[in-house]
Amino acid sequence: MRYIGNKENILDKIYSILIEHGVTGNSFFDFFSGTTNVARFYKKLGYKIYCSDVMYMSYCLQKAYIENGEEPSFRNLLPHINVDSAKLFALPLELVLEYLDTIPDVKGFIFNNYTPDGTKELSQPRMYFSNENGMRIDAIRQQIELWHKDNLINDSEYYVLLACLIETISFYANVAGVYAAFHKKWDPRAVKKLSMRPIEIIPNVTENLVHYGNSLDIVGQYDVDILYLDPPYNERQYLPNYHLVETIAAYDSPEIRGVTGMRGYENKKSTFCNSKTALRDLDFVAKTAKYKYLVLSYNTEGIMPQSEIMTTLSKYGEVALEEFQYLRFKSNNNGLAKTKKHVNEQLYILKRNEH
Ligand SMILES: C[S@@+](CC[C@H](N)C(=O)[O-])C[C@H]1O[C@@H](n2cnc3c(N)ncnc32)[C@H](O)[C@@H]1O
Image (cartoon, rainbow, N blue to C red; front, side, top):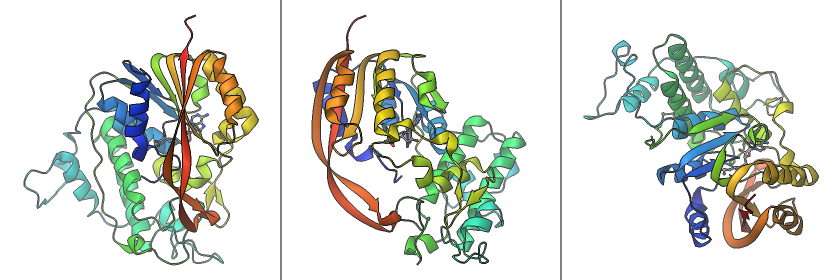
């Protein structure tokens, strides 16, 4: 998934640097989990995972990829649905996704607010999804909710389906990576008919714990070997950039406004998007959390100055700083143009003093 600060392409690099510094153990806390890519990587290595994020869309991904460890069987649901799969050995998840692709369209909250026909009375009709895909998303999202309410799917199956929907929509959204704006012409991929994609199911070797909300609220609750911090690095809050994914995940018909149909986000503002409060809270986390190693992913363009990060972290132990170049996707001009840009990724590695 395209997500600002997604570490998918540099996981191996991060891992090899951490190994060089002897940063290993059995438990890993992905404190700003986002897409869960880092948590997934460490889960596959057999670590016990803790993760958290203030975005509900991230929580759905955490439930499906991190907490869940079983291929969903859809035992209760399958006898109730009719799937005529062409695949010989289709997994239950594939069968259910195939079925979801065939249910009738619905004109619901997404069609009514984010497609051109649904918003034709606006001076600038919204073009986030084609009319057809808007109706597909409403139909699928409502069906998942109904199955869950009727106890035809359990919690894990519910979140696996939501994660599949979250991952799928990014292939059909008429945006340049973020949802802060939509294209005024159709991107060819946005006019293809939406078809649900399965997510990878990662087996559990141990129980993993996930959390939805401000991670600062759970600082100190878990004692971990590696505490991994990947906070926002500039003033841009995450919710405005992913408001529509959040709304599809929560499907809570929020009040929306403006050209983009943005939901409110007062309770989802990150203190890491302001340099003063970011340093204050970095200090709070480094001081209060329980860990052997604290690893901070940041970059040279971040709003917390390097010298101040070093001063803050050094209060709690020995700090090493590693830097490497990375070609990063950058969306600018309100998301309408995209450029590639070299940035210097940084890893601050704090080995905590014995105390
Ligand atoms: C740089 S992204 C993390 C990217 C992630 N490592 C990945 O690979 O996808 C930062 C994340 O921090 C979350 N966030 C910011 N402040 C937060 C807070 N106080 N508590 C929980 N999550 C927060 C944002 O919602 C966003 O998902």
